[in-house]
Image 1 (spheres, rainbow, N blue to C red):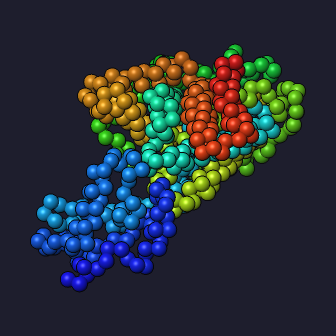
Image 2 (image 1 turned 90 degrees about the vertical axis):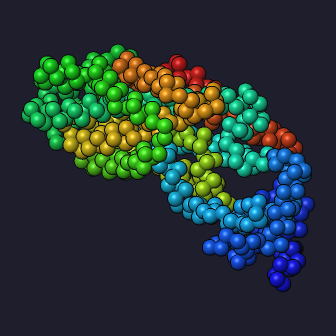
Image 3 (image 1 turned 135 degrees about the vertical axis):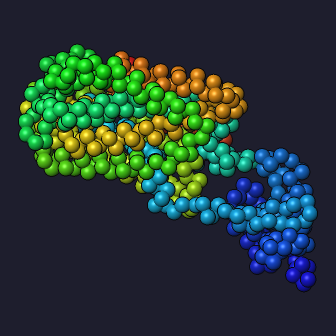
Length: 558
């Protein structure tokens, strides 16, 4: 009974609480712990046990302040000494009993190493297959410079997105995502435009996945067929000889031109030595994209995507295997480098090329994580290390891209093949008979089959939620949306299966708003409202906006 009549404020904590009393924006939970409910006051086995007077007074005070005004208005929000810490929250029933909230935030927080790995794993996608092609398009030296420079810019813009909710005064933005921030600053236009460009990135990724799944399924089936029928394709493929064969599917007869516009397909699916009926039924562009429909369309209609989330570890295995594959191929092939700074030779590309915007478009999507970085960082145990962990994650992603891109470019055998033969999917530069590449394609195929429904689920939730206010309005609504998404993937896989161009266009489009324009504007408006915006900062952020616009426009002239 004596405990029930103790002073509500702990003298040892009074100084701590009132030291920040003048700041209504303080979110430090260390300043909100004057109340404590003893364990004996919490209902456990005895449902008749009641809470103490201390807990009842705490509950009454919180309810009183909650009735004063809306929870989003910080001016009349409960004082720091009234709100308990997250570990001291209880559910109070009308009967006066209190139930401890289990599974608090502390138990679900991740250490920094897990957060860094989660960001790395999320950012590592199909773009890694196009990094060597992007370096070839920009030139070896310029490609490395652009990769580092773009990575730094993307990191800074991601940092702006991460801290943007905390820079909003007098509003509880702790649960906001970046579209909510855009709505706060730009109204409905900001909300809908950020939603639209986020959809561009997701649907663009799904189209790339369909093209790659068609590619991997075709090559895997071709490998199995050739092995079963003892078919040798080495004579029909334009490439090198030896055990580590490298091929050039589209040899360029004009080293000074863009070989993607006029090409001769020397290795036409390897079907010259295959049975005619197999060639008709197993075509990379005519039949394979259609074979995926009965497999993936039903999976997209699942109400929940939790089952497929269990297989996300396949992405990590695939990336690690790709790194091992690149290392082994580089050791066997060796380096083939020759520096020609501006002139074009028969086997090498210049170090600086005017096609470099194609690489910036690819990198914009390769480093893109801005639409989900706030969610990922909320699970970080030490929030004060968010900036450091984000920087380390970007460093690891950049090093991974550099490792794969530089080694594939350097090891590509020139001569006898030209560096211009490097494909947008560098696995296409290895024959279907290569066992290690067959394993890589199989891994990637299964990974994409499990990730594709997850992407479809994200698209459905955002589209249906915005339009109908319900994530699953009906089966026919969901089916119609999925048919549109699958149809776009089938059309691209059939008529334009160039993942490099698809990635660069989708990356430059979504990056225009979510990477450059909105973060830069949000930063300038926030600094201006605080009265600390200076002309160097305004000039730099205006440069970011112009850079995003130029990045998108340049894709149409390449």
